[in-house]
Image (cartoon, rainbow over all chains, first blue to last red; front, side, top):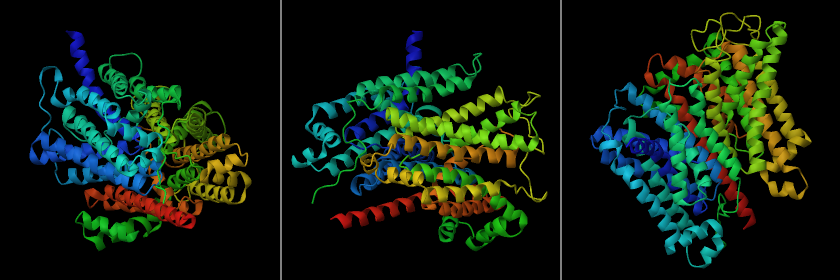
Amino acid sequence: MEAVVWFFLIAQFTAPVAFAALGETIGQKAGVLNIGLEGTILVACYAAVVASAVTGSWMIGLLAAVLIGAILNLIQGFFTVVLASDQVVAGTAVNLIGLGLTSTLFDAGVASGQKFSGVAGIPKLPLGIDVLLLSLPILAWGVHWLLFRTQFGLALRGAGEYPPAVESAGFSVIRLRMIALLIGGVFAGLAGAYLTLGTASSFAPNMTAGRGFIAIALVTFGRWKPMWVLAASFLIGILDWLQVALQGRSAIPIQFFMALPYVVALIVLVAVGKGTQTPQSLGLAYRREK
Amino acid sequence: MVLVLALTFAAFGLDVPASLAIMWKGAFSDKVAIARTLVRATPLCLAGLGIVVAWRAGMYNIGGEGQYVLGGIGGAFCAKFLSSFMPSVLSIFILISGIICGALFGALAGWLYVKRGVQVVISTILLNFLALLTLEWTLRGPLQESKKQTFVTDTLPNEVMLMRFDSGTDLHSGVFIALIATVLIWVFLRYTIPGFHLRVVGDSPDAARANKLPVGAIQIRAMAISGGLCGLAGSVDYVGLTGRLADGYSQNWGFIAIPVALLGGLTPIGTLGSATYFGALFAGSEVLKRSTPIGNSVVPAVQGFAVLAYIAILWALNRKTQRRFD
């Protein structure tokens, strides 16, 4: 029984990174390295809390987060996919804007008495289970199905491997990549919604604390396979839970445990290196021949 | 830029001319205000130069924050364990150890990219968090003040601190370090062969490789210089301004340095200018926030704009080169 309790506790730490990493997987499979994930999640967090606070409904909060996530990713996609500008620079810009914008709005909101904590969260069943948490494995399987079992997924993967081939098969690489980013944005929105409405029901500046970047590392760790990405996220969930569980109870300084997720993410990236399973055109803009 | 500022004020429903007047007064009106501006501009300029060097080499270092913090930690270790040295020598040691710590931290990210293909953007962000946690830990461990009551380091004795020009202000001689660094980096990037190679690698790694340049080594070196400058920013603040480290030691200086460098067009001279502009913004908003709670928020809003402007410029340049080929 104890193990079950722990499992669901850890699952709650897993969910935000897992959603984010699954969305990033779709994008990377299509050849788009979404560096702006961190900023997108942060803005989604803000949107979820504010929408939930204003309407008193967690569903509208969730919807707002998903919508904002999708919009932000499409904006980023406009720069990186349509205008073919550098994906890293555009992503970094989204991160900076996300951090600046939400911190600014937070400061201004607090000053005018806006509510940023104790908003309506996702209703919980026993063991801390909720709808969103239950949907996680289903969505992970869904991503797997979409990528590897459908015609569309094949085209999407082609856009990440060898875009000209996909283009000559009659698909639009730009449209495929934008759709991938759109789905990725929805997932980033879910991550933001879970990080806020699924746990503390509050917002704080820079509350994502690098989870977006850890999620990017997890995609590599999971070898671009949704189920493995989910499993990798669970590992980070354990580490994340560990530092909360051991707070003040261990002789080893707590900072050591807090550092673990970052260290593991780094080690994973170092150990895995580039590898042969990386989508061949990851991070490269595609320009249609005229 | 003043227009952006005015629009930001208007967006938050403030009285625009009055707010602008307060900002101006807080940044330039008298010697206290000007000193405030220059003190804020100093770390921004140094770390901004660091960003310039890395980004010009195509290494998107966003780890300025971590490198800044590590520079401070390196300085504090020096101060603690080499305190028997002459004060003036010690301050120089502190500065140098700041450079070394930052440089090693930056080079680590560069090495990870060159040897293992780890994206610099991701590794530097992860390293930022590690640096901040290291700071937290050292303040509770090896670097904690002698009485062991609060989580800060011992305050540096006055003789070790960088020279101040006027006891009424915070202005310290670190300002000259920033100026000298600007000139050095400008000369380095523009007039030296290693600087030229660095830019070639940034503009086109393939072209560099075709000309038998050691691309990996140049990229790592760029990250080391970049980290060194950010680390220097951290130790200059430590030995010039604060005199001690605490949890909130870095007010995001390393992070803010990115928009500073971008707005400076990724050139050393431009960075000096934009660091001064942002320094003035910080100085002005410090005064502004006494009258309105959103004073703090002005700076990030302007930063977001700076980054967008940079992207627009990039896109325009991109289109121009493409037209040339079409």
